[in-house]
Image (cartoon, rainbow, N blue to C red; front, side, top):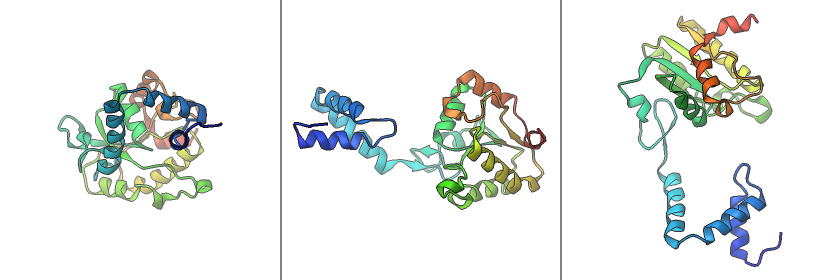
Length: 205
């Protein structure tokens, strides 16, 4: 791809680093920005820089937050005795969009994947165990993607939590194997949360 401007080339290169953005799409985005008013471009740039500087992770659940503790953990309307364990913030957003779940969350920050060099110590698993140990949790829902990494993480979490003598459930398999929560439609995902099953029962299948 030949560029008439080094500034243009550099901007396209930076945009193309984003997931799912090829050089042609990056060029289209950059040219679109060039056609916008200077104030709009300044607002765009400032919002990205402010996001990177000021964004936090909730000290309780590790979800992305503007404050030290996120709005969900702070809410008096949530069921504090139920924790739904998810891979990342995108899964929190997907489940919230179903309007079928009213408990709290715990964001692991990824899945166990030895092939990628990700082990249990790289995730927020110890803090989950501490939350369960130090509070009156009555149920832990394991809502992880239906793939090899998700199943490996499910099994590890079950082993870490089973001695607490509380129900450990997993979302119903309305989501096909290999599917990720963020791409599931809201009706299917909502039904999977509502019709969750004991994790031990899923082991016998």
